[in-house]
Length: 441
Image (tube, rainbow, N blue to C red; front, side):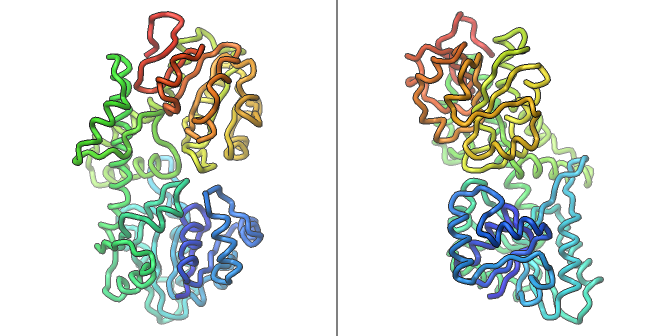
């Protein structure tokens, strides 16, 4: 089938590449001409494991191409996927400017019956609004139907998730649209859950809000564990053995970040507010996460009365491993505060440093290795559980000027740390090798 995808960010590019991988003819469209040129050269603008190789192989097989011209991209497509960004407005609501612009472009270029599939995360009622925009602005007497098909991809494992998802959600208005989508996804062999437009839109927000709730809940439990001497990892394992709860998203740490959970929880709060409903639970989830993101900074300030001229190493800048995404990352928030406190910060990340350099103060230094970052450091803060960090020889920490380790992702087993000569603090677990008996809380 001939498909077009509007937007070449995480969702759009991964969607387009994977649809081409199962045999469809796919054209990816983006207004950013520099990005399109980069894609034509076989270089994706994002870091995602396996994406480069799959993209290049499908371009070579002539199943995948890229253009910045909407008319060129849309004119032969039977189905057009909208996968452009919906950035957050200042009030927490989703900005639909890009989505609506794509809808208008579709309406002005369509010369045959077309199915429009919204993958962008949009507030409830948006797809009905897009249908109205298209009906009012289309230039030719063709049928253009809008459907909802929210994505559930995790950055760092987006390709795997595309081919191994638990379900594909489609919100449709007609049986014909449902059949067409089922044909597109036939070779993915994933169960399809069909519902109405508004319910499909709500499923996306509700799913992300629930997962964010689990994360904030276990982080609150972790903070209590530190005060009562319990180990949150053992608590989480015991909880997760209950099938009603499950073990996923019960890993304590420094909160959630990235492009989805922060934006989607705020947007759902706005949706609730628009219908005069106080979503108290979600409000608490968001507040807990804000506090959790600066947890390591709080611990550091308990160690040092002043951070002025302290050399602080930061390991991990991406909000999670296997991505270069630093959006809403706790590392960026804390580093900015360290700079304000006049600390000397040196940071390291395997893939996210170029992105971080675009948003951090020029006073922040960047190391080419973990070992370089730790030279003469008086403390080290770990924000991302990269394999490279999790498997490091722990002797390297003992070579710091002041061997003080704050692990925000519980990268190391307590048993493996206890015999090394450095003070170690993690999230929701007992501190080890303290200079005194006074635990940091």
